[in-house]
Image (cartoon, rainbow, N blue to C red; front, side, top):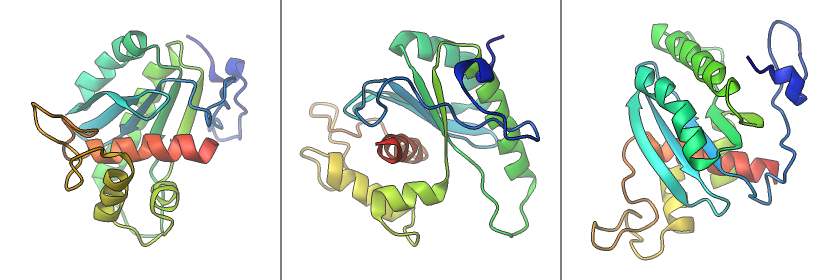
Length: 190
């Protein structure tokens, strides 16, 4: 098994490893990025190219995604991996949050066994600030900002039609959140 520390990651104690800075320019968008919005049962993922163009996007059951990760990484030559990390804001949380944490660990373990060179934890607050410039932003604000920035002709929902697809064609539910993770990762590293 490939060790994160062999890639240049630094141990911060308590078993946590800081994200590895990629050798290429992440901000310059030279690498294919896989971003995941994890959930306790299903997770959304998106693979984006250097220009943020979605190459693959879906929401699938966690067990299925974990099995698919090596093939997705190989197919797209993914070199960078980002995921939305759980953050504590002092409120009580339910079992779903802890199950999501377990899945994040399983995804990281699977990705660690591939050729991915960098790992990035993206917090929700990072997405809000990078995409909307405000901590008060909600999902609808983030989605609107993404449509305004990336949609080419369907300025209402950014998806277009089967005959005339736009940037977000095929996106549904948490796929928007996975794309927000990708954008926040790229721009935070710029």
